[in-house]
Length: 489
Ligand SMILES: Cc1ncc(COP(=O)(O)O)c(C=O)c1O
Image 1 (cartoon, rainbow, N blue to C red):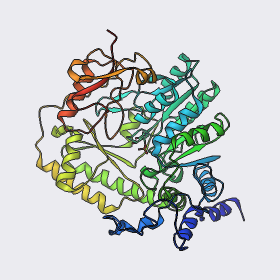
Image 2 (image 1 turned 90 degrees about the horizontal axis):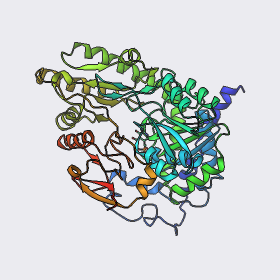
Image 3 (image 1 turned 180 degrees about the vertical axis):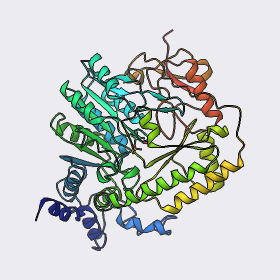
Image 4 (image 1 turned 30 degrees about the vertical axis):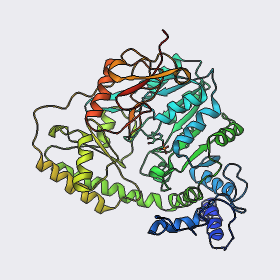
């Protein structure tokens, strides 16, 4: 059998799914946890359609391996995933891509280390800085001012950061950005490696890349050392499951295992693990065909949007003409700014009036994510709603406020602010103080301010603007307050 055929044969297997199925129907008498005993107690939920999943929800019975020490069916399933993704190792995780990111930083950085990080990184990256104790050197992404989108970093800009910070031990890249832009990761990785840096990639929104020939190549194919992939986002597994991929020997496998075992529950969900095993098989066999079809639907949708009077669609050309290296066309971005409607407002209107759930609304744009599960009728319904909005709202002469790209000054590293004595002060009284918490709207979960940064006027105003727009603010302090490092008297 040739290599490809052999791989196809291998990828048909789903070792964990099969073992779980066998266990579920083996009439095993359960004297272990969980207490619902494979669904033998009625709850409000078990009576519903959803109830069947209790049968598959077990802890780590004999024969089903252990996620924190895989030596059986989980090890086999992880091995198949590594082969499918083209990495040398794959680790299944059950606390989201956030866990994969925490593990990445914890396994290769300590207190005295420095890491280059784009400032528009997800909150999990900032938390990983607190956990590892490492010092960030923030790289400022360029801004698409017209639409208020933080862009991916150019090779030249990353090269400059690397050259200016020869003591950095690692670099983290976002690939793709939430809005689908990808940087020239292959060239960046080659350059970073030539300077001795470890390359970590947040590929939360790109788990489908490896399996779709119409899209950018994956971070592993670009040569990255560790890749955190949010398999549940565009990769077909259940929400909260994710995968960490590793290749090469720049990061020690034993450090990864130790970090996983610090962070991960000792009772990982069998449903999540099974869903990763099943997703890997579906990605391997079906993703290319399905995504090809979905991208065609996307093209038709974009074409139809040309008939709209006031609404813009941001196409690949827009990104390439604005300096992007490449673009993932399964991200669909619309702007309603000519109607003076913010993305946040349209996000609300779409759900409340048309029962359409977008991924996120920003000040000037709204983002829709297309994936293998997107159907033509979904896009037809979306187009009808968009057209209705286009006809209903009047073109406005007043413009939305200009998008402010602003990150506050870093005074101390996140770990120092986290460990400091803290107090909650009213936001309006916080000018000049050092933040001891992250504040963000969710989604996207990109912090407006992080621990260790100085609170300034722009940040206070931005937070107040989001509050008045009824956005969901994630923070630790009570409403109207911000947690800060307590000033010595
Ligand atoms: C860019 C990015 N990285 C990491 C994460 C964390 O992923 P998860 O929600 O799976 O923990 C997210 C989640 O939205 C994200 O957008």
